[in-house]
Length: 201
Image (cartoon, rainbow, N blue to C red; front, side, top):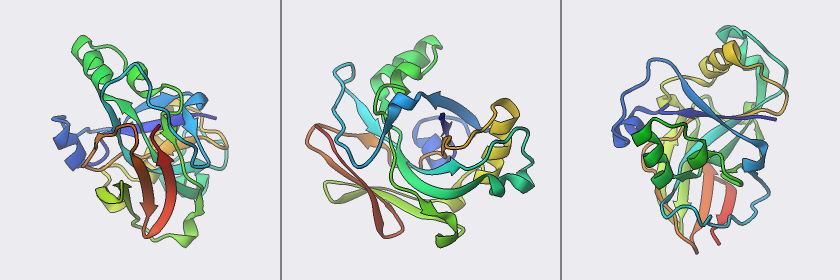
């Protein structure tokens, strides 16, 4: 199982990060040890002082595929969830300054909390999603605003990486990313449904 994450897939988020709008999808990966499920608590790591949340729609691949044409990409996933890409922003900043890879800031243990999954036929074509921290909404997005659609992402990724059953694609975060602290309670929603709850310990 692979966790593939898309960077800068919402224009307003790219802007808030002072980044250019990408012309092609940008992706990075997290190991399976990054996965955090079943609303388990997240323990704030001691190697960062600036841990950020990035709320994202997540799709789960349901069949093996390579060189998938975009028009067929919808056949390669049937379930959708929501996840959080935890990012050690201070470490990421250092990586960017030196031109180093981001894994130290993105791929650490439990850095990819993921909700349960919903059959995509139960959801609208354009999906509203949001995050609350301590009952205050801090992020809100809609998949209509993606720079690259899910089908485009699947097609593009499959040019480079064979997609396998169970692989997860984090599809990018909207604007409003920010810092978390010990004691925070995070709740992620698809529409009005509370999909994911995380206590920061």
